[in-house]
Length: 127
Image (cartoon, rainbow, N blue to C red):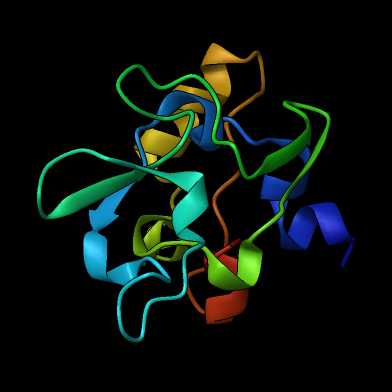
């Protein structure tokens, strides 16, 4: 299986340029047990932070590197916030996530094909 087939996110990055990435402030590394680099975040409310570049108007996450729609990566992948960890390209039944399909279309990329529902969790959760 090619790397692109396993993880279509590495040639996309649309969600990192179209969604606000907000999360509980305690995920930031200036809180006890936090892991998201606080200097890359912005305060949204007393309890929420967002990745810089995604608030108030989603434009491009500061941690996204590369060219959207071509080749991208997350500079804080192992320390990314929960919305990024939990966003699944495919649904449990193997169909593409509609949110993913919508933002891919906005940058001119086609919808991803459905995958077999018995595929491994790693194949269903590209990212």
